[in-house]
Amino acid sequence: MTRTIKIITVISIITITELLAIKLNALEHEERATRIVHKLNKEIKATFDDALITSEVLKEMVLLSTDRTFSQQQFDQLSKKLLSTYTNVDALLYLPKGIVKYASPYVEHKLAIGHNVLLDIRRKRGADESIRHKKTTIIGPVTLVQNERQAFILRKGITDDSEFIGFSSSIVYLDTILDIVEKSLDESDINQYSIVGYNPDSDTQEDKVIANKGNATKYSHHGVINLYNTKWDIYIFTNNGNFASRLVIFAALSLLAILVWAAITYFRRFQAAERQRHDLQHEAHCDFLTGLLNRRGFEYRFNLLKEKNTSGSIAIFDIDFFKNINDSYGHDIGDAVLVQFTKLCAAHTTSEFILSRTGGEEFMLLMPDLNQYQAKEICEKLRIAVEKAPFFIKHLNINITVSIGISNFASNDKMETALSYADDALYQAKKNGRNQVCIYA
Image 1 (cartoon, rainbow, N blue to C red):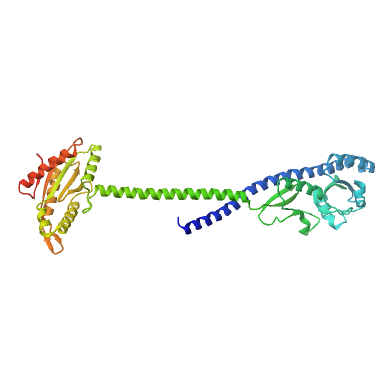
Image 2: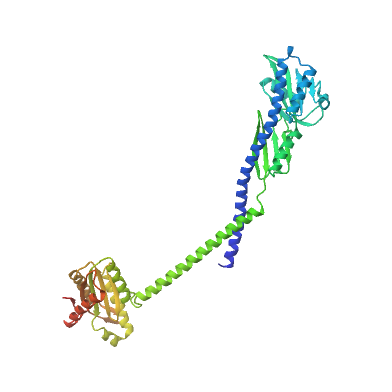
């Protein structure tokens, strides 16, 4: 592996590590944020359920009272019991005709007494909404007129048939909610978040921010907290992973790269070894001059046919008086004659036949599935083609002839036996005057 490739590989691994770390971290924190939001939903809902219960109880007590009147003593007794039971609720108020008459704890909320929420432009919208839709409304966080603390106000309209009696209100301080939120988020190791809620008493975006800590604008996970008819949006910020996760990913990718590199290296070496083996096998089985099989290669192919229980015929070719060509024109011309003779033989035989040069001017042709008479017909055509074909080599025009001996073989015959018979037939062809084809009889 070159230095450039190594550098590119390392840079690629680092880049992929960062991308994977960001993606995996985002998926992990998305799932985690979902669990956190679900937990917050349960905890905050439980708090406002307490506020809903207290205001509902106060409402029912008013409706059950004589002439729809409710004394200070009755209110104090009821509110004391409710606030001690539902500890997340910070205050209770009774507002006949929209005017605060009773408040508990009194000292902390006495300045609210006499306040008319139907005339207060900051409270009128929420109060009207509660009357008009006959439903419980939650507003906040808003600044309380009695102590200027931020709080959530749960208002429940009290009506008798079509007559509006007033409101029962439960107050939960923003600090109480924030304590619950911060405790829950701290337990989940979340230190950057933003919670935005609907406040019907305000049109400004700033008044809709319930809680904000750190920077939860980038890489945020959004969730929704459902509170009856009010929804809060929560944005939780999570970082892009830590060093440990990146180290694990980098190590895994590095190991993968090493394994891939090792596999490629092994494969390349295996290919080189296979090529070398093939080249050596080719050199061992092939004639360097003509490219045909040599005797070893011919024997290998013959044995393959025997394994398939194949019978056929073998022919031995011998170029007549080839020694005279070497003596008269030199071995270079003789080699050129052998090469051209090889091409001529290949042109007059099929790919199913196996042609080889076994030495000097001697060639052999293996013809599977042919009897000796079919083989003689093919060899006779080849003999005639050789006799008629002029061999133009440099400035020379050389004519040659070939003698051929044929024998057949069975699937259980040895090659030496079949070649011996073919050699006897070749001897007969030469004895009869050469340039002819003879079959072993």
